[in-house]
Image 1 (spheres, rainbow, N blue to C red):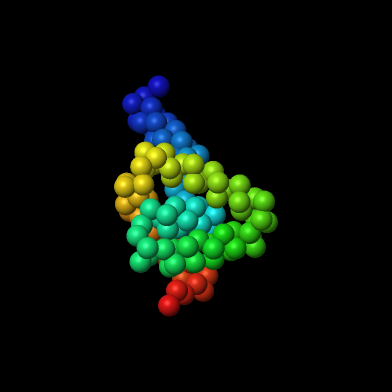
Image 2 (image 1 turned 90 degrees about the vertical axis):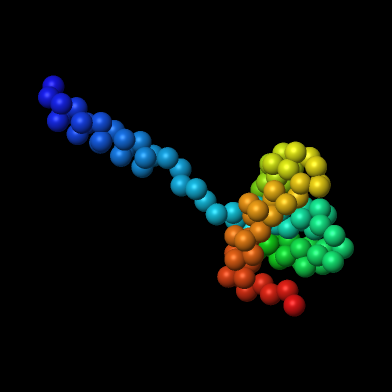
Length: 116
């Protein structure tokens, strides 16, 4: 087999493999609900109402889309992952803020949530 055919075959294989990789997804409402509820607990009192309200909104949106049992299950799974991400240490809640806050805020706002 010629070098050019091997090169072409290698490119084709690489492109096929890249197409089969799962896309990186933005967090959904159930994941955001988990984030907001954990952040409400991990941050000070001054942020509690805003974060908790955001969590309730996100969970309700997830329930509308997937049904309440599925939304709660997805939220629970996401909460477990997030607790591991912050090493079960509430002092490290900023890890979750960095990873989830911006995208979850945008998702909630796109769905019409406003906390005043």
